[in-house]
Amino acid sequence: MIHANESFDAVVIGGGPSGATAADELSRAGHSVLLLDKAGRIKPCGGAIPPRLIADFAIPQDLLCARIRSARMVSPSQRVVDMPIDGGFVGMVDREVFDEFLRTRATNHGALRCTGTYERISREEGKPGATVHFTADGEARSVHTRLVIGADGALSKVARQEVSETPPPYVFAYHEVVEAPEGPGAGVDFDGTRCDVIYDGTTSPDFYGWVFPHGKSVSIGSGSAATGFKLRGSVAELRVRAGLQGAATIRREGAPIPMKPLKRWDNGRDVVLAGDAAGVVAPASGEGIYYAMVGGQLAAAAGMEFLASGKAKDLGLARKRFMKAHGRVFWILGIMQRFWYKSDKRRERFVTMCRDPDVQMLTWQSYMHKELVRARPGAHMRIFFKDMAHLLGLTPAA
Image (tube, rainbow, N blue to C red):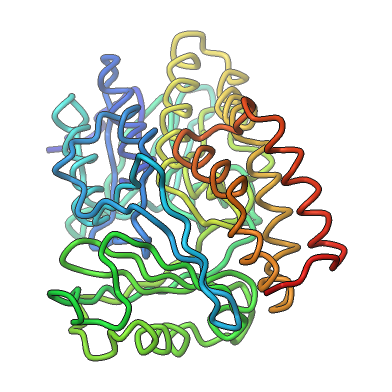
């Protein structure tokens, strides 16, 4: 229950993985926190989480609805390259269940949760802090706070009002969650322990399509930034190719996915962004859950330093620390997306590269542990020369 003129140390706007993590971190540290989240929001998402996330954020094993042991890369000519995960797995989660777990964990640690719609922030001259205005239960409400964390998605209203009027570049993603086939042979070439990633211009002219198992369900989706590209038609074709055109549809969802971090995440006063609002989804792969939760964690840490010091410059530490840890990976993946996804000819060569054992080893190690692998300089050198050969067209695509 929120009382009139109630005050909080922090208001977190958005209850996805980033906002829920930020609220949890602040609450654990003893701060009073309001977590404001709108109702009925489930983001279209493949739902993959790496072992690093499971360990760092203490995710219970029973939240994993599937364990992926390999990925299958599919080229424009329908060639397939299987990339087994040697001695490990990638966890898959249902975002509806996973996000609710994170929000509940935050409330269990003291955050006050409110279902409502954020409207705006106002300030009184000479009075520190801000007033957050929102609508809940059909009524206009407001609370006072010293800190606002905007974690309200790629088209963040908080970001537009307080930090940057221009949203980050994004692709629009759409997926359909369908019932998984039961038993061997129930689907065409379907494997509940394998993620299929489809690279061709008919599936997406500038991104990729996917078929990701979730135990009893399957996420089938695609994304694109191309104006006029029909994502629903693309997904319908993917369902046919996967043999799942007759599977019962559980739900359909669409949303923008940012592809580049904003140049600034705070307003130099009392607001800091996190997650999609800050643009922290990995280019090329579209992976966002891990980076969203790290972003929420770092926003909370910077926010706590700001609350202790009263110095607005401390809010800038969230972006500075994130980019120090992950900026190089984002830069490399951005180059990959701009070059390899540009045409079917290049996509064909990209899938061919994925056959290479060095590429597979370094890809999985970097993904699973969320850091560039430095222990294998020989492998890096071999990949460099092979990559150059593909770039120059010296290596056959098939």
